[in-house]
Amino acid sequence: MAADLHLDPTTGGFNGLKQLERTLPSRWYIDPEHHRRELEAIWHRHWIYLCRAETLPEARSFRTFTLGTQPLLIVRDEAGELRAFYNTCRHRGAALCSEPEGRLPAGGITCPYHAWNYRLNGELARVASAGRPHHVDIAGTSLYGVALKVWRGFVYVNLADSGQAFGDNFNANTEQFEHWPLEDLVVGHRLTQRVACNWKVFWENYNECLHCPGVHPALSSLVPIYKRGIMESRDDPAWQAHAGSEDPLYRGGLRAGARTWTVDGCSLGHEFPALTNEERELGYHYMTSLPSHYLVLHADHVRSSRLLPLGPEETELSIEWLFPRETLADPAVDIMRACAFSAQVMSEDAAVCEMTQRGLHAAAHVQGMLMPEEYDVWRFQQWIRAALGVS
Image (cartoon, helix red, strand yellow):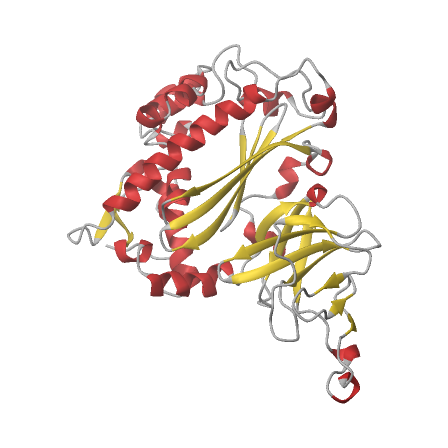
């Protein structure tokens, strides 16, 4: 029985689903036409994370992206402001920049096909045509602009004028992360890979830990409650029996003696000074911005993960590890102790997501079912249904 979009079955002391819930139809993960529908209704209408602002460090820096089917260009103008455009010339539609990143020449943005030239604010500056005055209104022929916002160093774009408030993307009040100096952090390591699964498969895996004991042995050792296949104490129907326990196996948090997510649980040394004792002791905090971005915040670094759909059965996963500048400047610090640990977790996740995608092709598997611990998968799937206007 399909749950009502506005009824949350997890209300009450126990977090888990209290009745059998069905998954999304299997064809929604495979069918090209349905994928096109999701691109239009979700990816081309919501705020999508693309990159860190610092990766465009100076005037004329640029980066290119493909969001669904749409080619995008981000540039930093001469005044230091970031601007987003479709990566498309107004003349005959040629891509303006072919490289993934770089620095534009002093003359601005020039189309490599017929040399139409644009200022960094998108205005058309000149065209290579003797008859131009009779055909082109330079003042009214700017690049196609795209809405852009920078939130604490993270660059988001929105292709549609849908009226969606920027903060509606986030799953939590972003003020709760004010003790992390997110805007001042620097990318120390980056990993990008193609995962052979539908983008929703990856989000569903992210939203449950029922798989953690079997798939993530190192992570489950570092975060003992994950050994139980749950994310927090009230995911257990008998949670009240351990309500006062300080054991991380029952209350959550890192194992005794661990400080952060590294191969040995030891801190990299330069921890964020403004964190509270509670924030430090838990050791990990999640923030999600559907459909493209999530953060995992620790005492000494932050991991930023971005998803972009490449097709109905392929997703680009880009991971950035963010550190204080003093961490990256300290020759005694090996940041790969943090990067290697979570890269292994992500590799394990990618493997089971690809396994799931292969299995979804079975003609007999029209729809699956959710276990009580998968309540956040249910919430995510309800979000998808609502975005598509179906129940």
